[in-house]
Length: 242
Length: 242
DNA sequence: GTAGTTTGTGTAAAATTTACATGATCATAC
DNA sequence: GTATGATCATGTAAATTTTACACAAACTAC
Image 1: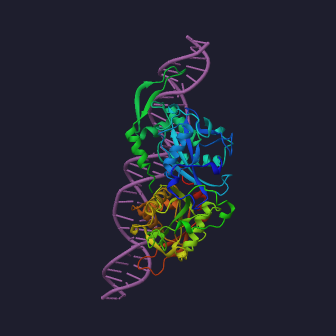
Image 2: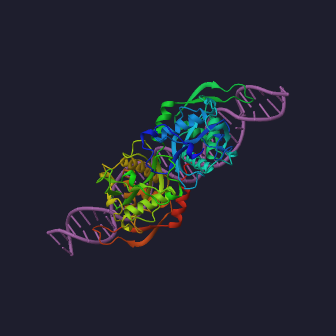
Image 3: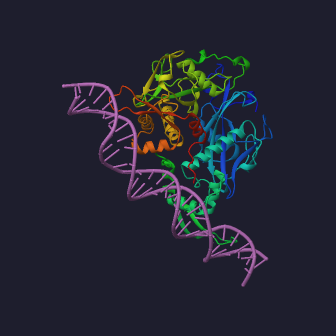
């Protein structure tokens, strides 16, 4: 990416001759997924300078005539093919030297997705797209590691304030899978009986008359989320009133 | 503020002839204070177009060569004289049409301060500076009302996850004052005895051998915060573990 | 059919939350 | 100086929530 090469639709509407601000604005997407055991994150391998060949968060500059939230959705789609994911803003990173080619301020968005439902393919300046276990991510382009860490902190906070799982698990799942998800996010083990008591008391799960098949042990009962109740929880959150 | 008039130090370091992005980046500060009864917010009356004569959040464009966090501190100081306040980022607002003169993306910062300790005076494009009860704020420049509402939501969340008060109350205060603060933020009444039990059980208060004076009723005991313990709470937050 | 693995379940103790009412103490007005 | 009005300070019992903890049941693979 060279600064001179940047051309965006919509720029015609503003007089280019008028020097305004010599800066750019970008978005970076932190897409979390869960494979049943580990928390994973979607990364692209950059095919352009700077940081060519590095793995990075899917991100790019936004157009002059698009809202940043729309820009985040577009950038994610253009780089990875991912569409229709619910993106939520996390934080804006604006240190002067975070981009080697000039002043670029970036806003991080995160999302939770079911890996199995995602068809991803590298496009645009992405040379590859791949899911990485978060425990194995170490070296990323720009300040993307810092951004990732901020998003993980955010995710830990979120999971304490509202249920997660609907966005990350397959439609039918076992309580142990749900527990593994919580443990993967919060990074500590939980008591099986207490976890079940707690999650069932929320009344967001529907017990199915189906069980696991072809497993080398006693098969577990499958559950699904009660979407209505789940969504109500999302809006209201838990209340931690004094 | 006219676009053509914008001149910032540091711009020399980048070739102005190279058209890059026709956009600007600003910060807006939401400064909360408490007068013992009501939650208040610091506003400026704008002395420049656009929105000349409107009340607004203290905000302005940031320099090309300053970090956005530093920019927030500078802008606040330049408009209101306020210094050395702890600013925390809340959210970035980036709809295309939020600024009538062009594409301006803004990041909101908030802070909690003791009104009595603040000497504020209007400077730069601020014609006046004043504290407003949040309940009486209705018409603000730009999308500042939306930004204010987002910050109030944030404040409500924050107060559930960690103590507040140290930043907002005078050094010595009564438990009723502290309770009124919580009620002002959360906007619901609390039981006096239960509030005291809860706040005292946190062990962040120090009981003083001093009492209110010149009040037309039985004088209340004064307390102060145990700064060490308070700060530890701030870092760790409450834990809402499953 | 046996070994290996994961599922599913209950209870008692401890801790926390909630609801609720009255006498004490000061300034002020008379 | 005494009555009034206002706020302060305080405890408890019931309900709820949280925590710690162990073993038989059900399935596959061999």
